[in-house]
Length: 237
Image (tube, rainbow, N blue to C red):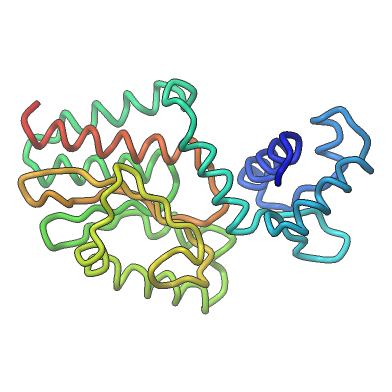
């Protein structure tokens, strides 16, 4: 069972790795937690034994595994919405949705705003079509420099719309991390989507696709809010 300190260390590794895209070392964490590097190394070794983090290179720091990200995301889902995100990004999203006018423009504005705010690829289902924006954001990430990973991401995108139609994820917010994705499981990508009701379908979706290394707290809040804003705008509320 993970201790409270191990949980906080894992949280710090996830958030620091998202920020710098480099493995996180014990010396940095020792300063953050005001303990010795030896204490941090012992805790990291236990987290690694449990499968939450890994060491990509000898003598390197640690990075989260899919299991580590899942633990972190589950903790975020338990948090109050009041604990998450600054209001400026939320207001920008609300304004862009409200000024859209026609339904297709409203949806496109929401997707484009998610792209700008999260620096991920943005996507939405429009009827039986998939609208995508921000490919250059996605493939500009350091994780996607190899041809095999790019092909995996392309496979995921090619199959996303029919998979969503068939699977119909029914939570207001759905997070698929790395190998949890329906296809493209080796791409090192996370799909974060929100279901919303509209005149097109009771199961329309908006969300983002990005590397597993990302700021989940902010991105999850924005995607959830985008779904809420779209449902309100498209129902006339």
